[in-house]
Length: 83
Image (cartoon, rainbow, N blue to C red; front, side, top):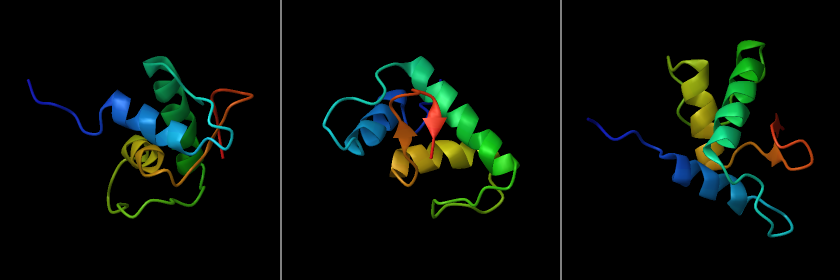
């Protein structure tokens, strides 16, 4: 079985590193999945990609890369909103 990169923990740590108040923004795998899905939908709907790696990648892969690189923000008040 191959390991997937980035791991859920990597993405959670990257998103939480962008927190302005030091409080964790997301704490569960479910939150990562929902945030990535919402961001992927934004990309499909025409939102510009903010990560470096955007060749022929699928929208979900791009969304996960953006979350991992910290180039998009996940809003805490609505845990699944991506900005």
